[in-house]
Image: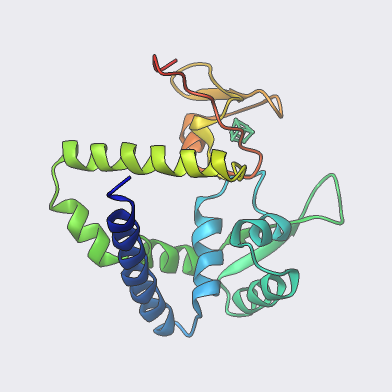
Length: 195
Ligand code: SF4
């Protein structure tokens, strides 16, 4: 409890440095932070989460802001829209090679990448676990548990070395999709014994 303010200060300072670096990187491409956020999200989300509505919910932005950002990125050639094959009212967003290049170059920011490169694998692994546990705890506390990493979802059922079954959609998907963000994500409740 006594460390709460110190930890809060550190997280706040880190996030400010993080945002400033991302903002600077965006300016060199004529993009505002919200535009970069859209690129980062689309670079990390799965096929159930690539719609404008999902982008809006992930960013916590208004429909108007999200729509303007998507139009600007489309006009700059950083993303494309494709109509859903089942529901013509819905369309999916995907990054072009140019959009993906910006997202890959700017996220993670170089300073964070270099700092983590200087740490050992064990240190990085410990940091990841602690941050993940903190995030899950806060998501559960605030009942804001969507947009999690697919492989941590209650519906994620590995089948073999290359595939898993999404038990929600009953689709078989490549194992590497487990590393993507999904708006349908439901958190697995982990007991103290780790099961
Ligand atoms: S397993 Fe969960 S997170 Fe993964 S695709 Fe299915 S619903 Fe989304």
